[in-house]
Length: 145
Image 1 (cartoon, rainbow, N blue to C red):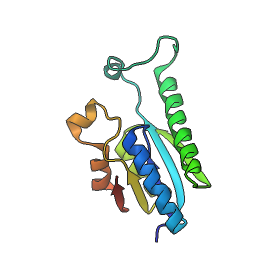
Image 2 (image 1 turned 180 degrees about the vertical axis):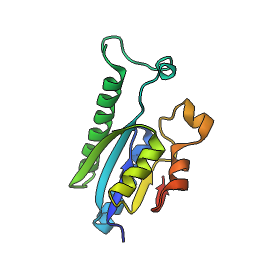
Image 3 (image 1 turned 45 degrees about the vertical axis):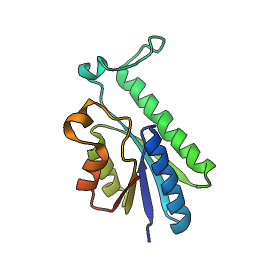
Image 4 (image 1 turned 135 degrees about the vertical axis):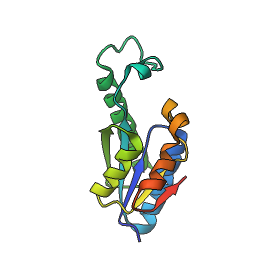
């Protein structure tokens, strides 16, 4: 059935639900499971909305990359706790939906399992949700949880 399942995660409750569904599907199919977290390049507009703690000064991109690594590794660990072995985790930077679809194509993913709503941003209100964009542009099936 499925050989490679991709789960984009952002630390939201819906991403966690998508991860849990993907673990179930992995158990049924024996598919490879990959977790992907994408962080956006920091801009001055986003800076005005950021909640960066003052005790963590530094380059905003570095802080966002480190936070994304924590999310990806946390999701990988959670998948392991649910019984999924051999889960890989990746972090990328850039436009979220576009990177999810590109990653899926580059890694021969044949199913994307994604949460219906993530942590979101102002962009999602203006341009539509990430899950909507992924379902509209992915070449493989997309399961929205």
